[in-house]
Length: 580
Image (cartoon, rainbow, N blue to C red; front, side):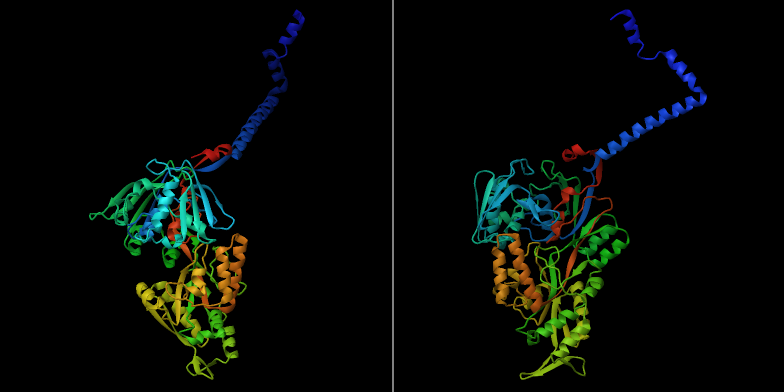
């Protein structure tokens, strides 16, 4: 390259003098315009970068904050094998984990299990455990723990409330992380059993039944769930007043974000007072009237379907008037379902006219109106010869004599059911039916009325569950105590569908059997179905991520608690799956 070329290359960039000359050529106003365009360009670049950054960022939960909750009762057995009270089950749900857990839509997903398989005949379930699951004391969770827990449930001396669910099931391990369950016969709802919390064998083994029941470990448990015990506050008598729970940092997929303080109260009035005084900020299973007041104060009140059915179950053996199909149908037509939901439940419930509540597997929406149809009920009775007497009560004369539309309605001595009974009495009186109401304390209702089947009609609730086993409630073999067929219902076709549904191998086949059964029940009306209540949960403002699945018991409100959070952070999308 010669000297001329070198000097030319050096003059690719303008000199200061040249820039100054160009700048002077624009004049005063030109320079202002040039400066403004430069500023606009810089702002545009910065704005675009900010928008791009905002687009790439997502909001993720962040650890921090404490939820203080009130619970009715005192925990005694924080143990999945022995838990009996709501207080027991609440803490058990937080501290222990099962092979499976409830997902947001109410189905089941693996928890301690990594995966599972079911044999073609539906009798053998094989679970492979996650190899990195740990107990709160740092020891690994293995197949030995699962086998030990199920064997304890089946121990007759322990009288576990979960034993009935596991009868006829054998369990064995195949290596350290594989467990196999074998059923005597296929049972479609078996998977629900595997939500049972698992006990650490290394902590509980070597105890006899008495030692197991009275062990201090029932009050100071170690589990593998999303929370571990941080501290326990007791009164002067050593009775627990509250448990402080900390997120279990080594719980893998859980990564709970908030800490918990669970405080116990003897009665609902005390808990409500504590709430009003600010000592607690959340509470569950509160009465609908209280929920209505709180919601009007802009306090978050969360609802979830409760898989329970409330209705009037009639005893055709004791009260012959119920053998007449038109009588049962008329009572169903005139039932004030909407009034019950609005006036007694304050909207925290749904009207139903079948044996399965909304949210449960196999639920089939009603083709009929659930609104009260008083005039239609009156017409149906008159058409079938039930004429109204001077006292307003209908009667019918046939070859066996005169039958009068009157009966006694028994129920529990609790405000909600008493209010429902009085509404039924009032509305059924409008169609010429005389109803006498009787109220019993819970133990008396169970032992003196339900078990011996000594009732004309029974206003009662059934806990059907998300994955209902209708066999227990409606099969003819369950008509007498300890069976749960309180309608004393008998129908060969219905029995067949119930039997086949229990052993169905696919969801579609099982759903078809349940739907066929519901059609029979709606056609025959062996009970007057009324409503399905909602689970009511009061939470503090600012708590995020709460989405309750359909729950069977109040403790299941904690099924997804590891998703709850107060604090949030913003991170790039590509890092959101790794952010804690």
